Length: 298
Image (cartoon, rainbow, N blue to C red; front, side, top):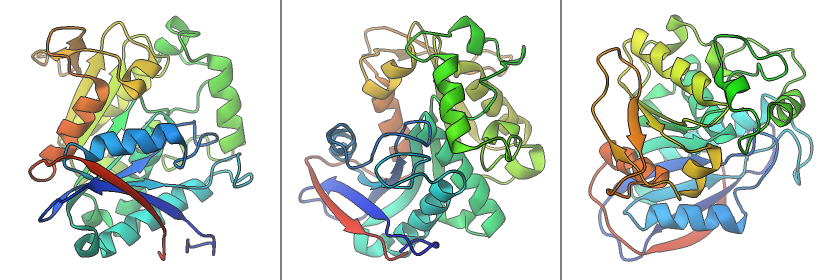
């Protein structure tokens, strides 16, 4: 059960026949913290695909701002993610998990970053070995885009629209937590970030959310947090999440901006980069996933 007395369903995928501990991923699904479900067919296939690379993947059915579990604005979903983190950590041996990466895309990227920030406040940061945030939705500034985040205007309408982002943000938070980094991690300051575990931030060039992800990456560097940035060129949000993008990694520019990726012959998709990061926080790979789901007793 969650801290509010609510059941939390965890969907677990792991390779068939795997022996020995494997790197683990606590996956937080996208949807602006308001829509979509971990139990959907899409996310079931996504987790199984990750598990096939030799990972134990745990998807969290957290409470959304809206949806089938009812209307649960901030901080309900984040609390569920924190409770799931605690449960998975306490059951590492049973799950066969050697390390634990908290990861997600879009709204799940927000919750991944916020889960790490909350873990620092709660004294549970030792439970997290790494964080991977794909196209994170983290500023909350969508109704009135600031000039320091030009991608919100430049890329408005490339799959995501500023209007949609603003509506989702208003459902998740009516404005009471506009600068709370647990709600909108973009607003984190150095004292919030210092001491966090290694992070990977992956964004897309044509995504309205591009610049807030890059800004967070730079904040991590300024706080001396081990971090790696990645920009997928000529792609919008869906490209990273759905994995059609093909990219190759080049050298990081000396100015400290993100590593640039472009469509190329290495055929390294957003999900492949996700897998690589999770393995880098853990151990060797295996194959062939199997799926199950359990109710958390967190």
